[in-house]
Image 1: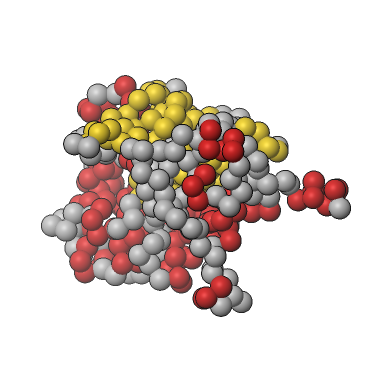
Image 2: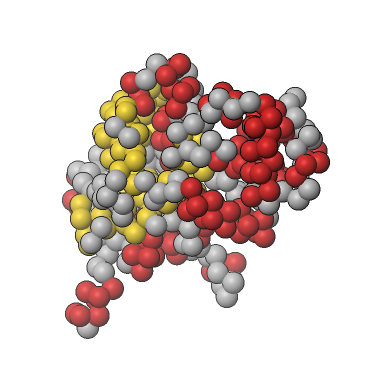
Length: 335
């Protein structure tokens, strides 16, 4: 499924794959992925660790490990990122697309003051003078909620708290007003209160700048109030894609339903938490049929024999499952 709420497509992945060469053989981290992201749209990529969600977008940024290889197409405004030479890609990264990483301490240079890390990209990508870049950087620090920004502007990363470092990284990513912002688990290392503030910040600033947001997360609860649309990944493939409300109300794929059931609730005892049995498959030895079949409680013979295609199961809703769960209105109609 490749529909999105915005008629103007910003990013389109076509048969996009990522393979890593290892001594034990090739590992298919992402397989034949097709996805569209509209201009200004907010989409969440959800899945367990190892599902391929982070590697998908590290590949777009040209940040894969040396043994990684991309194939297919990744079109940003019609320009294939995978066909660009390193110097050409440098002109796109940080300007037209930017990434916020999970650990802000590793994303920031520990030996440079915050001021230099903010102003450098404005001078490089926007051709600003040092004075103009400094003024713009300070203004962005205020907008991301850094208290006393003039003083903290001169500090080193280790002199700031984790929440403030993450705000600095967001400020850096948004300074050049990119068309696409990729956020890779940006709230994982933060406490719940700071998480909520950071998510509100993404909401506010991306809407203000009409920046498309791709939020990569393993937590379905994070995306409920943030995303317009959700793509669920499992073992390197998209297994379900739908508008966020539709995905929560009518999950069609057993894996999505299992993720939803595993979200902790305040009224639920810890011992009652649902878990997904088994482990994700070895990407070098994937099942013959559906990748989720060894862990699926709904598995049938055809699930084992061949892999399901990503098919439409509702309006702007698709799932890669031979036996998708019925929609709520279908159940009510049957009753």
